Length: 494
Ligand code: SF4
Image 1 (tube, rainbow, N blue to C red):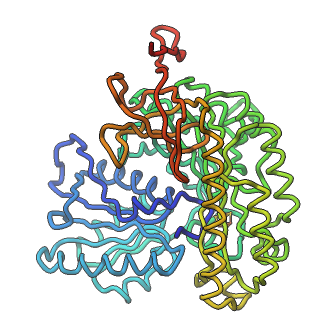
Image 2 (cartoon, protein in one colour):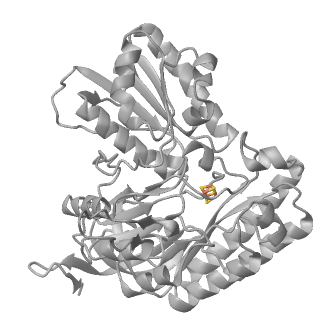
Image 3 (spheres, protein in one colour):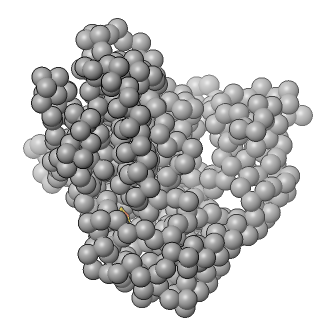
């Protein structure tokens, strides 16, 4: 079960992940922070910004809450269960605090923004509440809290993009990294809490994005995912004093600039909105081998009537036309979606429309969930959540079963083909196998045997078999950066 937002991937395996790098810096203030993160990729990327701000003000990281002077929890508000998880964690931290009376507890992210100072009344243990646009004020808020006052900053900003802050990487594999290119969202999808918790949309300075991606590449990273709630509406006006009006940078232009860093750096992005994705972006993907042939295009529902209630601002026919255009311009492109079962007033006929649209779109995978009303959203104010839970669950089950069949079919079609795989690390099931992804974002596993690959290498793999979630193959060749030229060169195994 996944989350009700466009900004996925809401990776279940990362929920509650604690930040644990060794910064290598001496302890300036002799203090340690512990941070754990919940929710979407944007939250995990934000935790890296927070870690950077705290490092700069002398805090070192620990992966043990028991030895922390400051515990931070970066929260998600997207559904009730996510908020409950945070409340449960706070209970655990209450016990830790009893043993360390001077320790501070801070709540960050969407739940902080949604509840504001109410959080302090509801959870007496919390000392600091900080919204997603106010992380720069954390050092000051910590000082305030150290003096015994409760500290809150949940101001949303129209400008803040943290463009100048170099995130300290969570460093889960050293190969793939997320880079925020914008914040907030100007859409008002009626089920979504993001416009209220993350504010208006703003695009980050394009130069700072390219610099961050270049620096990641130089550190050995081989894939960047450009992150935003609605990346297709990225639009940045460079400020060049004395040079007159500068040419704005669109998302397609940004994609190409990042792709030009090196052919050995893969570029992905998340998330696209069907109303905004342009042919310009599709052609940019086509022109660059290293921009991955994969688009996550959330449909949410196959019924135009429900789409209108969701305020998605496109029809079923518009969406179908976008899918056809993707398939026409980028043959073989991987496509995935988000689907909500049982939105307000959804009938069996609407549900059938969703199943039909899924079949026509032939998604390789989808993030599927049933509707859960969130306080403060347009849907909560305007509509009645009137589809009974058992029907929501039944419809979701049908959607999941259909998607599982389509994912298996899609993977079966890859058997016998050859693809390029970026190796991310050992397979979860066996350290004797490598795991990576192809351009279409499908997970590929292949035996290490006696071939000398490393994490971050590109392998040319022939697909031999599959499950619904994984392609299983055998390495035929290796691609490495040729010395001098910076281009990728293939070596074929005899
Ligand atoms: S308002 Fe719509 S487009 Fe914006 S984050 Fe929410 S679901 Fe995505």
